Length: 495
Image 1 (cartoon, rainbow, N blue to C red):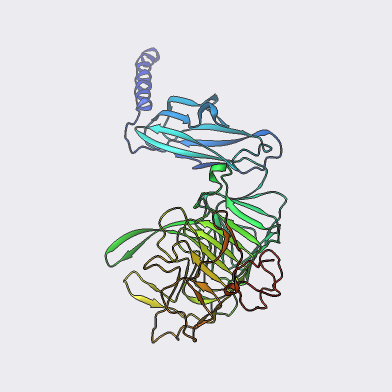
Image 2: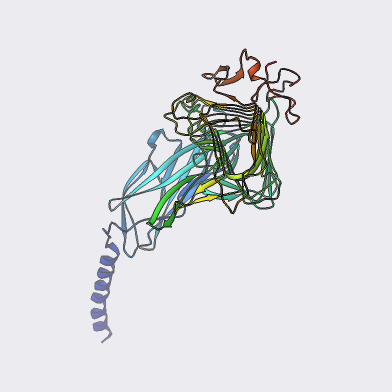
């Protein structure tokens, strides 16, 4: 009897194994069946101190109900890549027809070798792993730091800095993604620090304090992380980018907002002295709803140049400064908007943008904005004063174009705007002789800049019309030259 039982049971086992095998081998061809990854970016944030390698693990998951077949896994840079990959124990740059059972995974080991002494390397060494499955293409980014540096943030991330963090000039600093100075915290950047920002990167100060402490000849410098010569003068390489949707009376619309590389919001007490910002989108943006009478930002002895949009942007902000040079921006060099309080002495706003047609004035001051319903919203403009400044550009003199624009709206709910310009050189078709708002303005006279092609905005062989009174906020110019006599408009004084 037992013998017969065995004879009956064995075919049943074989049949069960057959059906089990068939079920296991069933491969989905559904184009919606995607792979899942342990990370969308493999980030090597190690600071390399010697020539060497480090390894990271990427896990690829099949969370579908059936087996999935990966047509191809490829290292995009191929044999020329600084990266190497190993898929489930097999090294190579391209792998075909790999299957992952439902609920299973495979391991990809990623290795990179960089030479931190090779100054020709870009600061960020990038590649990608490409996956093709059922006609779908998926990508995992590979990112490594190519020189010895301090690394902050991560690709596409928003990262909190340590409270009361200090950056020193021992090594360059790289910002990747958005790094945040949180409320009641501070970031101090000491003289000589070189900051390199990846595309879409920047510093957001949300209720905290930013203190940039450069020095004459040892400035703090912000720029993009592409060091190849062809990128030395390319605007728009960095700056915070935010995408959002909003709904108005016409339905849902999409919009992209580009914020400053340095973006201060609802904070007070930040300072920037002797800094250089170049090749970004918006150099510095200050937004605030506080009306404490304390500046959100005091900016002095600073150069902002070659921004794809705006050099210095205030939106309802409280700002002050002197000896600032803001040049060559795709829109405005200085835009002080939606009201606020602004006090600047001996600043040069000189827009000789050559990257295309420019529609905006070099300098803008207004006290309003137009909301989604096309309604003008007026905001207070108080205690605003510009003295001994130059507001000019290469569109000066064109018909129906002003390089200096003051647009003020009135409202029964907002006090009258309080602003004054003294001894400034401007280009505008509007009258600048109302004593309530203007004093000794120079309108329509081209500044004798030494060489706009070489970005030298010293006044060369200037006459007496470029002279102005002494102001005690700026006893020396941006070069450290004393202002004793024959004081000149703008940030430079002729020795």
